[in-house]
Length: 38
Image (cartoon, rainbow, N blue to C red; front, side, top):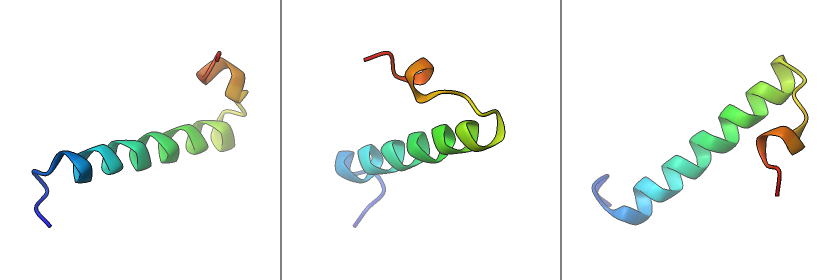
């Protein structure tokens, strides 16, 4: 699969977002409600 495919990029963005948020929650103890008010 090529990295230029929208599906691969979309999944990469989701994984990167989840990793970043989990890092913030673990390092800064930031409530998830602040990152996702919904």
